[in-house]
Length: 264
Ligand SMILES: NC(=O)c1ccc[n+]([C@@H]2O[C@H](COP(=O)([O-])OP(=O)(O)OC[C@H]3O[C@@H](n4cnc5c(N)ncnc54)[C@H](O)[C@@H]3O)[C@@H](O)[C@H]2O)c1
Image (cartoon, rainbow, N blue to C red; front, side, top):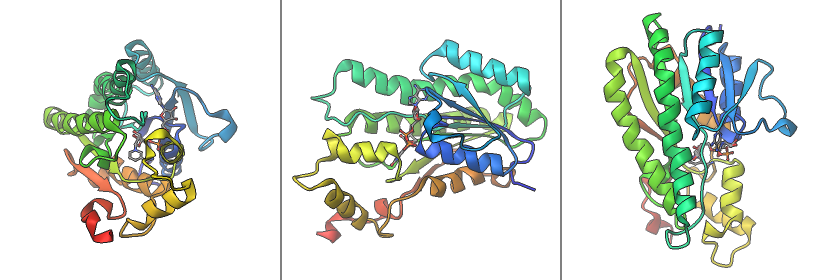
């Protein structure tokens, strides 16, 4: 029997690198899973036969309402919400347009606000039925310390961290736990774009050299995989984590524990 048997879960960014791994893991653990994303990434195939795709822009309140109404009709409750959708603009503030700044906040922060806000009635219903209801947001180690050339992204992730704590305080008494996962470098399309984009600060290195240099500053000498992240998300989603709330869970191969100058 899986750890999420009988639970209903919705994962935003469910067709992205990390979200896809979470959907697959949840389905293997027995959950009914909605993979919510801007596009279904059809060419990459289904993460799992039992995940159901919902087309959704999390920055649109109408679309978020419609998605939650579908979950209400299908199940009448939601045990797990994972807010994994996110975008990354690879620029300093000087190069970032107001439109890019606003879109970063609209997706990473307002999107997390909207899905959580409209999921709450369904999550209360799950908690009332005895489930340890769980919201899992996606922050980043960039919400604590900065990567060069990612100013708007860093700001949005800091906001998600603060929002996570606030939500945990407000909704803990209703039986709803709220945590954030704060990954370091995870090998996904977003990371590939960071290495190939303008914001990588590559200093004349080839992409391969840059990837290797970044890998080497990790105490564990490796990047994370989407499955590494899905493992922790899976634990936070389940009843075993019933006492875990309001925390920012850093998963970065030890990267942020280390004084970087020691590598020079
Ligand atoms: N990959 C990393 O190294 C890393 C590190 C730290 C944090 N994160 C965070 O983890 C989460 C997942 O990242 P990933 O690496 O899987 O990225 P990804 O780019 O592979 O996937 C992100 C997904 O979000 C979807 N999305 C974007 N805007 C959306 C919107 N408005 N509505 C609905 N869906 C939308 C995209 O279509 C995509 O499928 C993000 O919040 C990201 O900021 C990633």
